[in-house]
Length: 166
Length: 276
Image 1 (cartoon, each protein chain N blue to C red):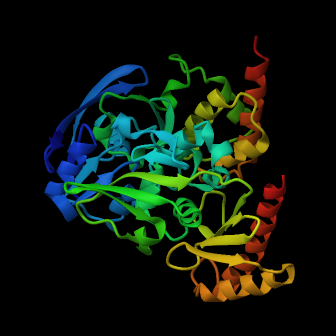
Image 2 (image 1 turned 180 degrees about the vertical axis):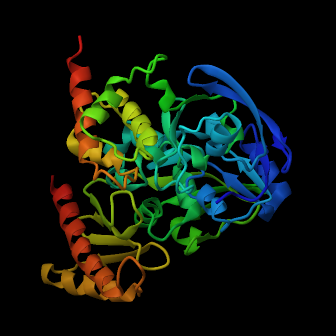
């Protein structure tokens, strides 16, 4: 049985956007803080820290999760994807990000990294979603700027374009 | 908004989890999905000297049907349960209720058993457990005991679980022949805590209605031989008996009205489902 005592730092290693990463964390350290403070990945945004706002949403083994409700130690040996995995290495936005820009799916952008990750994994399993399904998925995120209309349009358009691709 | 220090324990199987809990007792909490526990730890509403993480115990993630019941293991996520093929066919009430449990982004971690363990009065899964008359399987160093839903939840966020017991599984009765089921809830936004949630089970001779979000725990009432004109009075009596109070989300008057209206709606819906 693995037992990692409180107050001590323990090794954490996992795959982050395709790269092996390693750091140290006390048991109480949240994964969101580990990503930001230990690994410098400030694109993982933190707002409410109790799982309500969705800003810190990332993918854990391909599933959308709140990184503020996971402990860093729980990520050991797992595969994590953040918004950084979407654009290409030279900064070219992916189709979903482009669509968000075109439809004004963001204003201040604070909620955007989490929403993009939710939408990305949602589209992997729902190739032709209805507007209702998209809105239900978005109910797990708070945006105080846009009113969500642009995001819904951007996600529906991306789904259509991906479905039409040969 | 950060939890206090704790020791992280990761048992390899259920026996090791029981052993660890036997050692730490009330100083430990079981960590399954963490979607209710970790927010409460972040707020420091809950403090634990140790967290026993059962989320990675693969053999505990199962949904199986036997003896007229669907049994769900302790580490089964709500998303896994929703994806199980028998859900819509064998458990129509749960199938209707599950989309209201949290969000797409929390059901990926949140577990069915964790929701039962947390026992929030407005939460959907404890309401379904109470309405269907399900049970909770508890394991401790001294053995296994099975508690009926009505004996398990004792009040708001409180249960009859002993400090050395871990929930190993929960059991929901499967669909009964000639019976209709329906579920509805009112919340400020989809996925928020229900202001009032209702579940109906209707057979040829009886009507059962479960209500969550009003009293300190899900509450169930049975009627039999009720004439058509008597339902509104029966619902009104039930609404008053639940003793709801005013809070930031709704007044007691509004809650009583929801019990009457949503109650009638799901009973009608369950009657139609039975006929279909």
